[in-house]
Length: 373
Ligand SMILES: Nc1ncnc2c1ncn2[C@@H]1O[C@H](COP(=O)(O)OP(=O)(O)OP(=O)(O)O)[C@@H](O)[C@H]1O
Ligand SMILES: [Mg+2]
Image 1 (cartoon, rainbow, N blue to C red):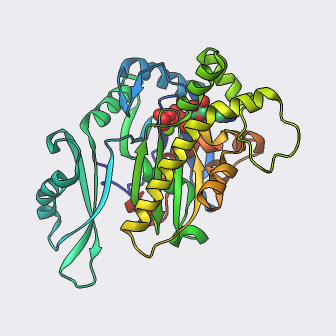
Image 2 (image 1 turned 30 degrees about the vertical axis):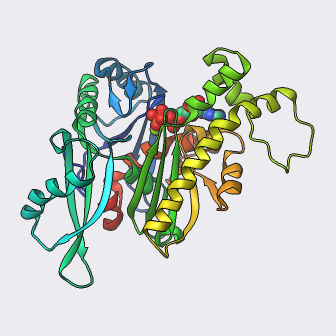
Image 3 (image 1 turned 120 degrees about the horizontal axis):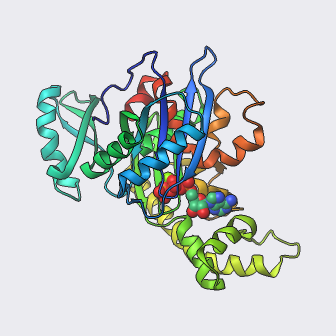
């Protein structure tokens, strides 16, 4: 399975995009039309506890059973899947190398990757793609994508347990770009941070022109917020999860009205993990600005289930000094309002950012976003 090959394989076959989240398994399927992708199916189910860790499917059979339920309960017609690997071992790097052909590149990539991979190249699945020659004509820009083999093989076996056929496995940042930014969008040529706040972790990506020059994964997400509520208010994790969804709100100076005491207490206990998250995002954006001097970040797209935390968008906007919008990837496809009411799409939207991009992979029109995406 290659991350970058068969990018534009088209056919009459339908694909379902499957996002292996540690909290929820999510899937989306689209059809083609002259007016762009049409949303056909979207569904999610809980991930069995502790079955996915750091992007590795620890229990492929158990996850396979949950995937089977996802596909049948969501009435998906496709059986071929497009999924993505994510987590701390996924590396996307743009490097400059002397001009060479694809065969020579395959040989050299291993040595090049050895310099920056935090694990052995023997454990890695590596792909490389030539992006083009540099201005002097002597060198070329190359996109190297790598992940630990375990991530890929464990995901494939879970899909096979479910009776599905893994057609493509890509890396998560590319899916999110495809879900949210198209070549004819005003934002396409800007540096936009796409931040996916999930359960176990948050991924911070910066994209421009269909490429992803920066991606980083930090182990803070919704679980840390739930844990803070459970510990701080001395309630079970299940109760804390419920309180987070129903009562948690990030307060600000603008909150002039009366605030119920529980809301204030929750806010106080979730402040430390939120502050930690903001610090990590700040660090990432600063690193990008230093590494790519002269580049400015124009805005933030906020996805992941935790993007639904009340006021997280306004809070991040205030802390980062940037406009922040909540990701609504499902709104970006044609859909029948009788099947998919607006309220449903808006509520599910942020957490479907990866699945939507995966489901649209085979329909993506643009070749450049295809390379990065
Ligand atoms: N309304 C809500 N308010 C706050 N948090 C929410 C809300 N709804 C869902 N969440 C949180 O979103 C998280 C799940 O998001 P998501 O589905 O993106 O995670 P995942 O992809 O399964 O996890 P990961 O990517 O970390 O493996 C959970 O921590 C959940 O508590
Ligand atoms: Mg996720």
